[in-house]
Length: 141
Image (cartoon, rainbow, N blue to C red; front, side, top):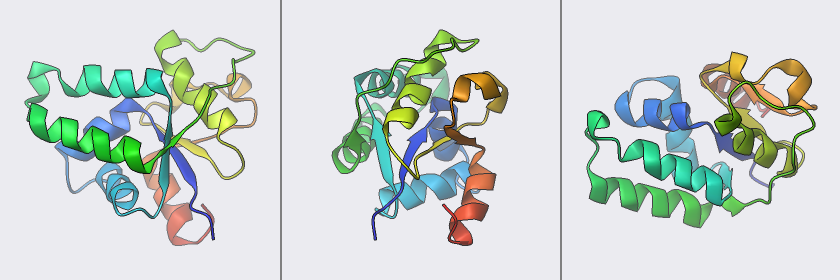
């Protein structure tokens, strides 16, 4: 059985690291345990690096580097598909583009669903972490 591909919006990754008891942390644990694959491209990895190195987050740079190496090494590199419709925040576009290109079963997880309006999704599955976890537990993800 193939593992589903997930695209984690930066806010989900940060939330998962800062709050070990929340749904984003549960998703991150599934990724790190190899139950799901993280789909990404160079733009997404650069966004992760930029945000995770912000001083106000107070994350250990060495541990952050190890985490990112692990996530990307076990994940899959996907060439994004250009969007037909622009998103309100152009910085969100790589995440949706990779989701669209990652194939059937792929899902983009975000804490900001409104950043991905329905018309721009072009059929991509965009969910909050808690909703995706419910689907995962029911075998529907």
